[in-house]
Image 1: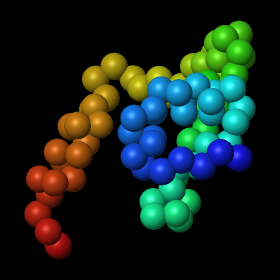
Image 2: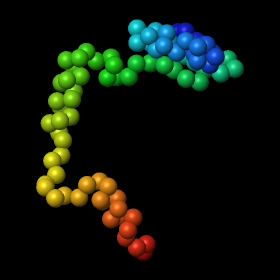
Image 3: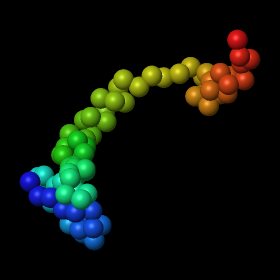
Image 4: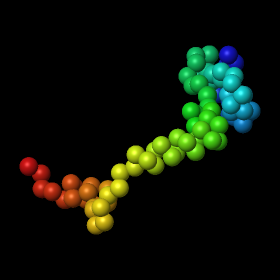
Length: 85
C-alpha cells in the first residue's frame, strides 16, 4: 500500500492512476489521515471481450416501450404538474 498527501496527488495524479491500474493500492491522505483510495473501476478491470459480453447482457434485459409511450421527462412533468393533495 502506498500513501500520498493531497499535494503529492495533485502534482502526480496521472502516475497514481497508472499505479492503481497496475494493481497497487493507492491511498491519499489529508494531514496524515487516509481520506481517499484510488482503484480501477470494475469495467476497467474487464478485458474488452468481457465488456462486450456485459453490454450484450444489459441490452438483452432492456425494456422496450411501446410507440407513443411518455418519456421520462414527460412523466416527471406530469408528476410535478399534479396539484398537491
